[in-house]
Image (spheres, rainbow, N blue to C red):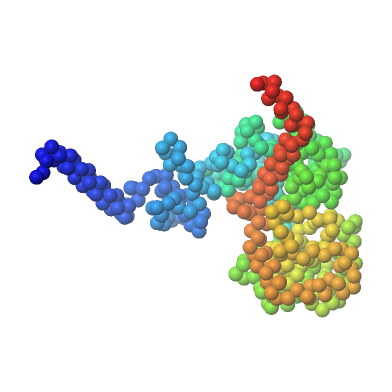
Length: 491
Protein backbone atom coordinates (compact mmCIF):
# COMPACT_ATOMS: atom_id res chain seq x y z
CA UNK A 1 0.00 0.00 0.00
CA UNK A 2 1.32 3.48 -0.99
CA UNK A 3 2.34 5.59 1.97
CA UNK A 4 0.46 8.91 1.55
CA UNK A 5 3.21 10.74 3.35
CA UNK A 6 5.62 9.91 0.49
CA UNK A 7 3.33 11.17 -2.28
CA UNK A 8 4.52 14.81 -2.30
CA UNK A 9 8.14 13.63 -2.47
CA UNK A 10 7.48 11.37 -5.46
CA UNK A 11 5.57 14.12 -7.28
CA UNK A 12 8.46 16.48 -6.63
CA UNK A 13 11.03 14.01 -8.02
CA UNK A 14 8.79 13.41 -11.04
CA UNK A 15 8.57 17.14 -11.75
CA UNK A 16 12.37 17.50 -11.45
CA UNK A 17 12.92 14.59 -13.84
CA UNK A 18 10.49 15.99 -16.41
CA UNK A 19 12.04 19.46 -16.12
CA UNK A 20 15.54 18.10 -16.75
CA UNK A 21 14.29 16.10 -19.73
CA UNK A 22 12.62 19.17 -21.25
CA UNK A 23 15.73 21.27 -20.57
CA UNK A 24 18.00 18.77 -22.34
CA UNK A 25 15.57 18.45 -25.25
CA UNK A 26 15.34 22.21 -25.71
CA UNK A 27 19.16 22.57 -25.51
CA UNK A 28 19.63 20.02 -28.28
CA UNK A 29 17.08 21.87 -30.40
CA UNK A 30 18.82 25.18 -29.87
CA UNK A 31 22.29 23.85 -30.66
CA UNK A 32 21.07 22.18 -33.85
CA UNK A 33 19.23 25.27 -34.97
CA UNK A 34 20.59 27.31 -37.85
CA UNK A 35 20.15 30.48 -35.89
CA UNK A 36 23.58 31.69 -34.77
CA UNK A 37 22.06 34.15 -32.31
CA UNK A 38 21.77 31.38 -29.74
CA UNK A 39 25.57 31.03 -29.63
CA UNK A 40 27.52 33.27 -27.25
CA UNK A 41 28.85 36.43 -28.90
CA UNK A 42 32.35 35.62 -27.63
CA UNK A 43 32.34 32.47 -29.76
CA UNK A 44 30.79 34.15 -32.79
CA UNK A 45 33.77 36.47 -32.98
CA UNK A 46 36.09 33.63 -33.95
CA UNK A 47 36.18 31.14 -36.78
CA UNK A 48 38.67 28.35 -37.15
CA UNK A 49 40.29 27.69 -40.49
CA UNK A 50 43.23 25.28 -40.86
CA UNK A 51 44.03 25.44 -37.15
CA UNK A 52 44.30 29.24 -37.09
CA UNK A 53 41.81 31.81 -35.82
CA UNK A 54 40.38 34.74 -37.73
CA UNK A 55 37.97 37.47 -36.94
CA UNK A 56 34.49 37.05 -38.46
CA UNK A 57 34.10 39.87 -40.97
CA UNK A 58 32.40 40.69 -44.24
CA UNK A 59 34.06 39.97 -47.55
CA UNK A 60 34.59 42.44 -50.37
CA UNK A 61 30.96 42.13 -51.43
CA UNK A 62 29.69 42.73 -47.88
CA UNK A 63 28.49 39.15 -47.71
CA UNK A 64 29.04 37.49 -44.33
CA UNK A 65 31.60 34.71 -44.27
CA UNK A 66 30.31 31.24 -43.61
CA UNK A 67 30.76 30.25 -39.98
CA UNK A 68 32.17 26.72 -39.76
CA UNK A 69 30.60 24.30 -37.31
CA UNK A 70 32.29 24.53 -33.92
CA UNK A 71 32.83 21.45 -31.79
CA UNK A 72 30.40 21.35 -28.85
CA UNK A 73 32.31 19.02 -26.59
CA UNK A 74 35.48 21.11 -26.49
CA UNK A 75 36.72 24.59 -27.47
CA UNK A 76 37.91 24.95 -31.10
CA UNK A 77 41.49 24.05 -31.98
CA UNK A 78 43.90 26.83 -31.05
CA UNK A 79 41.83 28.14 -28.12
CA UNK A 80 43.00 28.06 -24.54
CA UNK A 81 40.41 27.91 -21.78
CA UNK A 82 40.79 29.56 -18.42
CA UNK A 83 38.15 29.90 -15.71
CA UNK A 84 38.10 33.29 -14.05
CA UNK A 85 35.34 34.28 -11.64
CA UNK A 86 32.99 31.78 -13.28
CA UNK A 87 33.54 33.39 -16.70
CA UNK A 88 34.95 31.50 -19.66
CA UNK A 89 37.84 33.36 -21.32
CA UNK A 90 39.01 32.34 -24.79
CA UNK A 91 42.48 33.43 -25.90
CA UNK A 92 44.12 32.58 -29.22
CA UNK A 93 47.68 32.44 -30.47
CA UNK A 94 46.92 34.85 -33.31
CA UNK A 95 44.59 37.47 -31.88
CA UNK A 96 42.67 39.54 -34.41
CA UNK A 97 39.68 41.39 -32.95
CA UNK A 98 41.59 42.41 -29.82
CA UNK A 99 44.95 43.99 -29.23
CA UNK A 100 47.48 41.60 -27.69
CA UNK A 101 47.44 41.02 -23.95
CA UNK A 102 50.92 41.76 -22.50
CA UNK A 103 50.24 39.38 -19.61
CA UNK A 104 50.08 36.47 -22.07
CA UNK A 105 53.00 37.54 -24.28
CA UNK A 106 56.26 35.65 -24.43
CA UNK A 107 58.13 38.95 -24.61
CA UNK A 108 57.04 42.34 -23.30
CA UNK A 109 58.76 45.19 -25.13
CA UNK A 110 58.99 48.88 -24.34
CA UNK A 111 59.64 50.92 -27.50
CA UNK A 112 60.84 54.51 -27.51
CA UNK A 113 58.75 57.06 -29.40
CA UNK A 114 61.74 58.29 -31.37
CA UNK A 115 61.18 61.18 -33.79
CA UNK A 116 60.13 60.03 -37.29
CA UNK A 117 63.41 61.22 -38.85
CA UNK A 118 65.00 58.16 -37.20
CA UNK A 119 62.52 55.62 -38.58
CA UNK A 120 59.57 56.02 -40.97
CA UNK A 121 60.67 59.55 -41.91
CA UNK A 122 63.60 57.87 -43.69
CA UNK A 123 60.97 56.33 -45.98
CA UNK A 124 59.52 59.73 -46.81
CA UNK A 125 56.60 59.37 -44.38
CA UNK A 126 55.20 62.60 -42.96
CA UNK A 127 52.50 62.35 -40.36
CA UNK A 128 50.28 65.01 -38.89
CA UNK A 129 51.67 67.44 -36.33
CA UNK A 130 53.07 65.54 -33.32
CA UNK A 131 52.27 62.19 -35.00
CA UNK A 132 55.13 59.78 -34.33
CA UNK A 133 53.88 56.60 -36.04
CA UNK A 134 51.83 55.76 -39.14
CA UNK A 135 48.23 54.74 -38.65
CA UNK A 136 48.34 50.97 -38.98
CA UNK A 137 44.56 50.71 -39.15
CA UNK A 138 44.86 52.07 -42.68
CA UNK A 139 47.24 49.89 -44.70
CA UNK A 140 47.58 52.57 -47.37
CA UNK A 141 49.26 54.86 -44.83
CA UNK A 142 52.06 52.42 -44.06
CA UNK A 143 55.10 53.44 -46.14
CA UNK A 144 56.73 50.66 -48.15
CA UNK A 145 60.39 49.75 -47.83
CA UNK A 146 62.74 50.37 -50.80
CA UNK A 147 63.26 47.36 -53.04
CA UNK A 148 66.36 45.77 -54.53
CA UNK A 149 69.25 45.01 -52.20
CA UNK A 150 67.86 47.45 -49.62
CA UNK A 151 65.34 44.78 -48.68
CA UNK A 152 67.92 42.29 -47.45
CA UNK A 153 68.62 44.41 -44.34
CA UNK A 154 65.03 45.52 -43.64
CA UNK A 155 64.58 43.72 -40.25
CA UNK A 156 64.24 47.05 -38.42
CA UNK A 157 61.14 47.83 -40.49
CA UNK A 158 59.39 44.49 -39.88
CA UNK A 159 60.13 44.41 -36.15
CA UNK A 160 58.93 47.97 -35.61
CA UNK A 161 55.69 47.35 -37.52
CA UNK A 162 55.17 44.19 -35.53
CA UNK A 163 55.45 45.98 -32.19
CA UNK A 164 53.16 48.79 -33.29
CA UNK A 165 50.54 46.35 -34.52
CA UNK A 166 50.53 44.44 -31.23
CA UNK A 167 48.50 47.30 -29.72
CA UNK A 168 46.05 47.58 -32.62
CA UNK A 169 42.92 45.41 -32.89
CA UNK A 170 41.75 43.73 -36.10
CA UNK A 171 45.24 43.11 -37.48
CA UNK A 172 45.86 39.45 -36.68
CA UNK A 173 49.02 39.43 -34.62
CA UNK A 174 51.05 36.50 -33.30
CA UNK A 175 51.29 38.26 -29.93
CA UNK A 176 54.72 36.74 -29.27
CA UNK A 177 56.17 40.20 -28.60
CA UNK A 178 53.83 42.87 -27.27
CA UNK A 179 54.53 46.54 -26.80
CA UNK A 180 54.00 47.90 -23.29
CA UNK A 181 53.77 51.58 -22.40
CA UNK A 182 55.51 51.27 -19.03
CA UNK A 183 59.20 50.40 -19.26
CA UNK A 184 59.19 48.86 -15.79
CA UNK A 185 56.92 46.10 -17.15
CA UNK A 186 59.21 45.30 -20.09
CA UNK A 187 61.61 42.40 -20.64
CA UNK A 188 63.52 44.39 -23.23
CA UNK A 189 63.64 47.98 -24.55
CA UNK A 190 63.49 48.31 -28.34
CA UNK A 191 65.24 51.16 -30.16
CA UNK A 192 63.36 51.78 -33.46
CA UNK A 193 66.22 53.37 -35.41
CA UNK A 194 66.28 52.27 -39.06
CA UNK A 195 70.06 52.03 -39.06
CA UNK A 196 70.52 49.99 -42.27
CA UNK A 197 68.24 52.29 -44.22
CA UNK A 198 70.05 55.31 -42.79
CA UNK A 199 73.36 53.89 -44.02
CA UNK A 200 72.01 52.99 -47.47
CA UNK A 201 70.43 56.40 -48.03
CA UNK A 202 72.62 58.86 -46.16
CA UNK A 203 76.19 57.58 -45.73
CA UNK A 204 77.59 59.63 -48.62
CA UNK A 205 78.37 63.31 -48.46
CA UNK A 206 76.15 65.50 -50.60
CA UNK A 207 77.05 68.95 -51.90
CA UNK A 208 79.00 70.95 -49.32
CA UNK A 209 78.23 68.63 -46.42
CA UNK A 210 81.19 68.02 -44.09
CA UNK A 211 79.44 65.26 -42.18
CA UNK A 212 76.88 62.91 -43.69
CA UNK A 213 73.31 62.59 -42.45
CA UNK A 214 73.88 59.00 -41.32
CA UNK A 215 76.53 60.13 -38.82
CA UNK A 216 74.31 62.96 -37.60
CA UNK A 217 71.41 60.60 -36.95
CA UNK A 218 73.63 58.19 -35.01
CA UNK A 219 74.89 61.01 -32.79
CA UNK A 220 71.31 62.16 -32.20
CA UNK A 221 70.43 58.61 -31.17
CA UNK A 222 73.35 58.40 -28.70
CA UNK A 223 72.39 61.74 -27.18
CA UNK A 224 68.77 60.61 -26.81
CA UNK A 225 69.55 57.20 -25.28
CA UNK A 226 72.09 58.49 -22.78
CA UNK A 227 69.44 60.89 -21.50
CA UNK A 228 66.84 58.18 -20.82
CA UNK A 229 66.26 56.65 -17.39
CA UNK A 230 65.73 53.29 -19.11
CA UNK A 231 69.26 53.36 -20.51
CA UNK A 232 70.86 54.56 -17.30
CA UNK A 233 69.06 51.90 -15.25
CA UNK A 234 71.36 49.04 -16.36
CA UNK A 235 73.64 50.83 -18.80
CA UNK A 236 71.60 49.82 -21.84
CA UNK A 237 72.08 46.06 -21.33
CA UNK A 238 68.35 45.44 -21.72
CA UNK A 239 68.12 47.45 -24.96
CA UNK A 240 67.67 45.94 -28.42
CA UNK A 241 69.16 47.73 -31.44
CA UNK A 242 68.92 46.52 -35.06
CA UNK A 243 72.15 47.02 -37.00
CA UNK A 244 71.84 44.37 -39.68
CA UNK A 245 73.82 46.04 -42.45
CA UNK A 246 77.49 45.38 -41.62
CA UNK A 247 78.32 49.09 -42.04
CA UNK A 248 75.37 50.46 -40.09
CA UNK A 249 75.95 52.05 -36.66
CA UNK A 250 79.70 52.40 -37.35
CA UNK A 251 79.88 55.62 -35.36
CA UNK A 252 77.57 54.60 -32.53
CA UNK A 253 78.24 50.88 -32.00
CA UNK A 254 81.14 51.34 -29.57
CA UNK A 255 79.21 53.70 -27.31
CA UNK A 256 76.09 51.54 -27.49
CA UNK A 257 77.92 48.21 -27.34
CA UNK A 258 76.35 47.20 -24.02
CA UNK A 259 73.01 46.79 -25.80
CA UNK A 260 71.79 43.64 -27.54
CA UNK A 261 72.27 43.94 -31.31
CA UNK A 262 70.32 42.28 -34.13
CA UNK A 263 73.00 41.54 -36.72
CA UNK A 264 73.75 39.64 -39.90
CA UNK A 265 77.05 38.33 -38.50
CA UNK A 266 80.01 39.42 -36.36
CA UNK A 267 82.38 40.01 -39.27
CA UNK A 268 83.05 43.68 -38.69
CA UNK A 269 82.65 43.82 -34.93
CA UNK A 270 85.24 43.41 -32.17
CA UNK A 271 84.21 40.63 -29.78
CA UNK A 272 83.84 43.08 -26.92
CA UNK A 273 81.10 44.93 -28.84
CA UNK A 274 79.22 42.05 -30.47
CA UNK A 275 79.22 38.36 -29.66
CA UNK A 276 76.95 35.33 -29.61
CA UNK A 277 76.49 35.54 -25.83
CA UNK A 278 74.39 38.71 -25.97
CA UNK A 279 73.45 39.39 -29.58
CA UNK A 280 70.95 38.02 -32.12
CA UNK A 281 71.69 36.81 -35.65
CA UNK A 282 68.73 37.49 -37.94
CA UNK A 283 68.21 36.12 -41.45
CA UNK A 284 68.55 38.43 -44.42
CA UNK A 285 65.32 39.05 -46.22
CA UNK A 286 65.86 37.09 -49.43
CA UNK A 287 65.44 38.98 -52.69
CA UNK A 288 64.49 36.13 -55.04
CA UNK A 289 60.90 34.94 -55.21
CA UNK A 290 60.04 32.01 -52.94
CA UNK A 291 59.29 28.84 -54.88
CA UNK A 292 55.93 27.31 -53.87
CA UNK A 293 56.41 23.81 -52.45
CA UNK A 294 54.04 22.36 -55.03
CA UNK A 295 56.19 23.78 -57.85
CA UNK A 296 59.60 22.91 -56.43
CA UNK A 297 61.72 20.87 -58.87
CA UNK A 298 62.84 17.43 -57.70
CA UNK A 299 66.34 15.96 -57.81
CA UNK A 300 65.97 14.68 -61.38
CA UNK A 301 64.33 17.91 -62.55
CA UNK A 302 67.35 20.04 -61.59
CA UNK A 303 69.96 19.80 -64.37
CA UNK A 304 72.60 21.97 -62.67
CA UNK A 305 74.71 20.34 -59.96
CA UNK A 306 76.32 23.45 -58.42
CA UNK A 307 75.24 27.08 -58.77
CA UNK A 308 76.87 30.40 -57.94
CA UNK A 309 76.16 33.78 -59.46
CA UNK A 310 77.29 37.01 -57.88
CA UNK A 311 80.30 39.16 -57.06
CA UNK A 312 83.45 37.09 -57.47
CA UNK A 313 86.25 39.47 -56.61
CA UNK A 314 85.94 40.33 -52.91
CA UNK A 315 88.34 41.49 -50.22
CA UNK A 316 89.23 40.03 -46.82
CA UNK A 317 87.72 36.55 -46.33
CA UNK A 318 85.95 36.79 -49.69
CA UNK A 319 89.16 36.13 -51.65
CA UNK A 320 88.14 32.47 -51.61
CA UNK A 321 85.40 33.22 -54.15
CA UNK A 322 88.02 34.12 -56.74
CA UNK A 323 90.01 30.94 -56.04
CA UNK A 324 86.91 28.74 -56.28
CA UNK A 325 85.88 30.44 -59.50
CA UNK A 326 89.08 29.44 -61.28
CA UNK A 327 88.88 25.96 -59.77
CA UNK A 328 85.26 25.21 -60.76
CA UNK A 329 84.20 27.42 -63.68
CA UNK A 330 84.94 24.86 -66.42
CA UNK A 331 83.70 21.77 -64.56
CA UNK A 332 80.71 19.82 -65.88
CA UNK A 333 77.42 20.60 -64.14
CA UNK A 334 78.77 23.80 -62.59
CA UNK A 335 77.33 27.28 -63.12
CA UNK A 336 79.81 29.75 -61.62
CA UNK A 337 79.57 33.26 -63.09
CA UNK A 338 79.61 36.92 -62.20
CA UNK A 339 76.19 38.46 -61.59
CA UNK A 340 74.55 41.59 -60.21
CA UNK A 341 71.09 42.92 -59.40
CA UNK A 342 71.08 45.13 -62.48
CA UNK A 343 68.76 44.35 -65.34
CA UNK A 344 67.06 41.04 -64.74
CA UNK A 345 69.80 39.77 -62.44
CA UNK A 346 67.62 38.86 -59.45
CA UNK A 347 65.11 36.89 -61.56
CA UNK A 348 67.91 35.09 -63.39
CA UNK A 349 69.53 34.11 -60.10
CA UNK A 350 66.21 32.86 -58.73
CA UNK A 351 65.56 30.72 -61.81
CA UNK A 352 69.12 29.37 -61.74
CA UNK A 353 68.93 28.38 -58.07
CA UNK A 354 65.54 26.75 -58.55
CA UNK A 355 67.11 24.62 -61.34
CA UNK A 356 70.12 23.54 -59.26
CA UNK A 357 70.68 20.79 -56.73
CA UNK A 358 73.29 22.69 -54.69
CA UNK A 359 73.89 26.43 -54.26
CA UNK A 360 77.21 27.76 -53.02
CA UNK A 361 77.16 30.20 -50.11
CA UNK A 362 80.76 31.45 -50.00
CA UNK A 363 82.12 34.03 -47.57
CA UNK A 364 82.38 37.51 -49.07
CA UNK A 365 83.51 40.73 -47.45
CA UNK A 366 81.75 39.37 -44.35
CA UNK A 367 81.08 35.76 -43.28
CA UNK A 368 77.40 35.88 -44.29
CA UNK A 369 75.48 36.86 -47.38
CA UNK A 370 71.91 36.96 -48.60
CA UNK A 371 72.71 34.09 -50.97
CA UNK A 372 72.07 31.51 -48.23
CA UNK A 373 68.50 32.70 -47.80
CA UNK A 374 67.94 33.01 -51.55
CA UNK A 375 69.00 29.35 -51.76
CA UNK A 376 66.50 28.34 -49.09
CA UNK A 377 63.72 30.29 -50.84
CA UNK A 378 64.63 28.43 -54.04
CA UNK A 379 64.71 25.01 -52.30
CA UNK A 380 68.30 24.59 -53.46
CA UNK A 381 70.45 22.78 -50.87
CA UNK A 382 72.95 25.36 -49.54
CA UNK A 383 76.66 24.54 -49.47
CA UNK A 384 78.15 26.81 -46.80
CA UNK A 385 81.83 27.65 -47.27
CA UNK A 386 82.39 30.23 -44.57
CA UNK A 387 84.35 29.18 -41.49
CA UNK A 388 83.29 32.10 -39.29
CA UNK A 389 79.60 32.25 -40.16
CA UNK A 390 76.95 32.50 -37.45
CA UNK A 391 73.44 31.39 -38.37
CA UNK A 392 69.97 32.59 -37.27
CA UNK A 393 68.33 30.71 -34.38
CA UNK A 394 70.91 27.93 -34.59
CA UNK A 395 70.19 27.08 -30.95
CA UNK A 396 66.85 25.60 -32.04
CA UNK A 397 67.47 24.76 -35.72
CA UNK A 398 69.91 22.10 -36.95
CA UNK A 399 71.25 23.42 -40.24
CA UNK A 400 73.10 20.19 -40.97
CA UNK A 401 69.71 18.65 -41.79
CA UNK A 402 69.37 20.81 -44.90
CA UNK A 403 72.81 22.35 -45.54
CA UNK A 404 76.24 21.00 -46.46
CA UNK A 405 79.13 22.56 -44.53
CA UNK A 406 82.59 22.58 -46.11
CA UNK A 407 85.74 24.03 -44.55
CA UNK A 408 87.30 26.73 -46.70
CA UNK A 409 90.63 24.93 -46.88
CA UNK A 410 88.95 21.67 -47.98
CA UNK A 411 86.91 23.41 -50.68
CA UNK A 412 90.13 24.55 -52.37
CA UNK A 413 91.53 21.03 -52.64
CA UNK A 414 91.23 19.99 -56.26
CA UNK A 415 88.28 17.67 -56.79
CA UNK A 416 87.20 17.64 -53.12
CA UNK A 417 84.05 19.76 -53.36
CA UNK A 418 82.60 18.22 -56.52
CA UNK A 419 83.34 14.67 -55.38
CA UNK A 420 81.59 15.40 -52.10
CA UNK A 421 78.47 16.80 -53.77
CA UNK A 422 78.31 14.15 -56.48
CA UNK A 423 78.41 11.57 -53.72
CA UNK A 424 75.13 12.87 -52.27
CA UNK A 425 72.52 10.75 -53.98
CA UNK A 426 68.85 11.27 -54.69
CA UNK A 427 67.60 9.86 -51.38
CA UNK A 428 69.81 11.94 -49.11
CA UNK A 429 69.35 15.09 -51.20
CA UNK A 430 65.55 14.63 -51.14
CA UNK A 431 65.56 14.48 -47.33
CA UNK A 432 67.40 17.81 -47.25
CA UNK A 433 65.05 19.26 -49.86
CA UNK A 434 62.02 18.14 -47.82
CA UNK A 435 63.49 19.78 -44.72
CA UNK A 436 64.00 23.05 -46.60
CA UNK A 437 60.36 23.09 -47.64
CA UNK A 438 59.44 22.46 -44.00
CA UNK A 439 61.48 25.34 -42.54
CA UNK A 440 61.43 27.91 -45.37
CA UNK A 441 58.62 29.76 -43.58
CA UNK A 442 61.03 30.60 -40.75
CA UNK A 443 62.98 32.84 -43.13
CA UNK A 444 60.03 34.78 -44.55
CA UNK A 445 59.22 38.30 -43.32
CA UNK A 446 55.53 39.21 -43.12
CA UNK A 447 53.30 42.02 -42.00
CA UNK A 448 51.25 41.19 -40.09
CA UNK A 449 53.67 38.64 -38.69
CA UNK A 450 52.72 34.96 -38.81
CA UNK A 451 53.35 32.22 -36.31
CA UNK A 452 56.82 30.78 -36.92
CA UNK A 453 57.86 33.30 -39.59
CA UNK A 454 61.13 35.29 -39.46
CA UNK A 455 59.65 38.12 -37.36
CA UNK A 456 58.20 35.65 -34.86
CA UNK A 457 61.41 33.60 -34.78
CA UNK A 458 63.53 36.69 -34.08
CA UNK A 459 61.34 37.67 -31.15
CA UNK A 460 61.58 34.12 -29.82
CA UNK A 461 65.38 34.30 -30.13
CA UNK A 462 65.37 37.59 -28.21
CA UNK A 463 63.22 36.01 -25.53
CA UNK A 464 65.63 33.10 -25.14
CA UNK A 465 68.58 35.47 -25.01
CA UNK A 466 66.92 37.67 -22.38
CA UNK A 467 66.11 34.62 -20.25
CA UNK A 468 69.69 33.37 -20.53
CA UNK A 469 71.18 36.75 -19.62
CA UNK A 470 68.88 37.07 -16.61
CA UNK A 471 69.71 33.54 -15.52
CA UNK A 472 73.46 34.15 -15.76
CA UNK A 473 73.10 37.42 -13.89
CA UNK A 474 71.15 35.76 -11.08
CA UNK A 475 73.61 32.87 -10.84
CA UNK A 476 76.60 35.08 -10.16
CA UNK A 477 77.98 34.17 -6.77
CA UNK A 478 78.12 37.77 -5.61
CA UNK A 479 74.44 38.24 -6.36
CA UNK A 480 73.59 35.05 -4.47
CA UNK A 481 75.22 36.34 -1.29
CA UNK A 482 73.66 39.78 -1.70
CA UNK A 483 70.20 38.27 -2.05
CA UNK A 484 70.67 36.09 1.03
CA UNK A 485 71.97 39.01 3.09
CA UNK A 486 69.02 41.15 1.98
CA UNK A 487 66.53 38.46 2.99
CA UNK A 488 68.13 38.04 6.41
CA UNK A 489 68.15 41.78 6.96
CA UNK A 490 64.44 42.05 6.13
CA UNK A 491 63.38 39.00 8.16
